[in-house]
Every structure is written in C-alpha cells, then in structure tokens.
Amino acid sequence: MYSSRRPCQQPGYRLEVLDGELLLYHPGRTKMLYCSQTASLIWHLCDGRHTSREIVELLSQAFPEAAEAIPEDVQITLGEFLRHGAIRFG
Image (cartoon, rainbow, N blue to C red):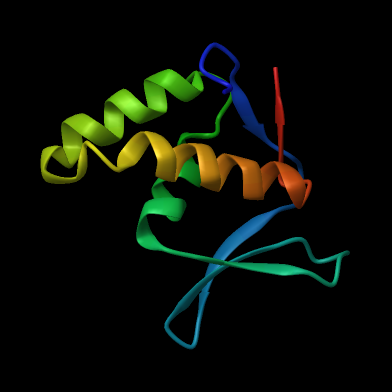
C-alpha cells in the first residue's frame, strides 16, 4: 500500500512503557495507542529514511520465522499510526 513512501514520525509523539505496556501518545492529545513489540520496532523505523517496503524487509530479515505475517503487520500498524496522526508519509 505505502511501499515506496517513507513514513516519518510526527513531532511530539512519545513511545513509553507504563505498567509494562508500550504506549504511543502525544502529551497534547487524549488518545493513546497500545503497541506490541513489533509495533515498537516499526515506530522506531518511521524515521523518514526507510520506505514501507524497506521496513518489511528489515523486519523479515530480523525475524525470518514470522516473515510471512510481517507485510500485513507493517501495513496495519502504519495504518493505525497514520489514522492517529502519529506519522505522515513523505
């Protein structure tokens, strides 16, 4: 879906651990996203340097046992980040 576009974090968003849960939030907004370990990795790769396709490739290399599910996981996670205003595509 976004394969050649580069996701980039929007300013002000933070990924923190709270009571053992990974939360992505913006201090000026009321919504929080609960993130899995995979979503956390995807978040860190949303640096404007990697395309969505490259994020899939990097995660597939790091976790070959999950390579089949990674493209869909990345697409869903990026969609959630985008829907909540946490990323933009460049």
